[in-house]
Length: 105
Image (cartoon, rainbow, N blue to C red; front, side):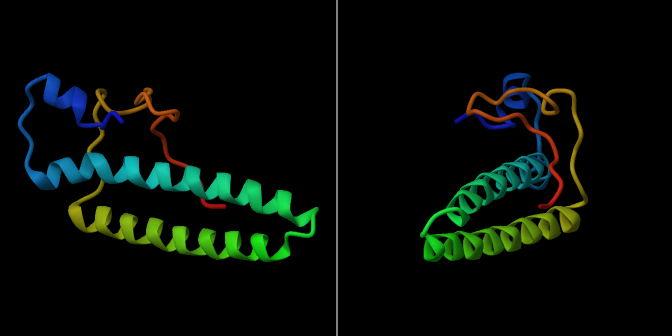
C-alpha cells in the first residue's frame, strides 16, 4: 500500500514526525469515511433480508468507525491541521481510492 508520504520522500523533502502526521491523518480520515460508506451500503442490503442481526452489527461498526474518524480529526486539529501540498492532494495512491475529504454519512 502506497503512503501519501512516498512522493515526498522520493522528492527528498525532510519532515518532522508531526508534519508527517499532518499529511497522513487526512488520508486516514478520508479512508475511514470510505469504509463507513461501504459498511453502510452492506447494512442497507441486509435491510431487505432476514439478516437483521447482521445489519445491527454493521450499524454498531459504523458508529465505532465514526468515533475513530472523530478522534483522528481531533488529533489532526491538535497537530495544526492538514499540510496541503500538490504532491499529496487529489491523486491515486495505488490502493483503490483517491485522497479527498468525504462528508459524514
